Amino acid sequence: MSEPQEIITVWPDFAEDFACKADLCQHSCCRGWEIDIDAATAAYYASLEGPLGEALRENIDVLADGTHAFHLTVDEHCPFLREDGLCRLIREIGEEALCEVCTMHPRFFIMSGGVELAGFGLACEKAVELLLAVDSLRLRAEGESQSFDFGALLAFLG
Image (cartoon, rainbow, N blue to C red; front, side, top):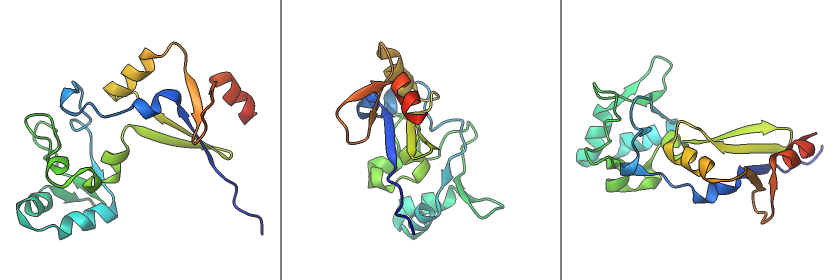
């Protein structure tokens, strides 16, 4: 039996500079999108007590396929998006309590051979700002200090 191949993750060079703009974002990902909740987080939310636990249970829909999603408000906002543009869940129990979608957005990953290409979706205002701020797109393999251009990535991928 062969050993599993090590996966190399390649990020845009600006990835380490990414941080959600939160209340400063004009196009919040907390509005207008279905927000799915992974099973582990749904179970955690179901176990929470007190007013926040009650609010979570009141604002989570169980979909026909058994998955969970936040029940958006009439104006299509996450029910935990506060008036000041901040997340009630982060403010009350911390970022570690977020579901996978909220933790990972706008990051995405695509496998190509033994390379995992990581990037940022352009629906995110901060991701677009970072991309527009660079003269040329540079990439970096996770854990490496040397960056390379897109042509080098294509050559590597063959």
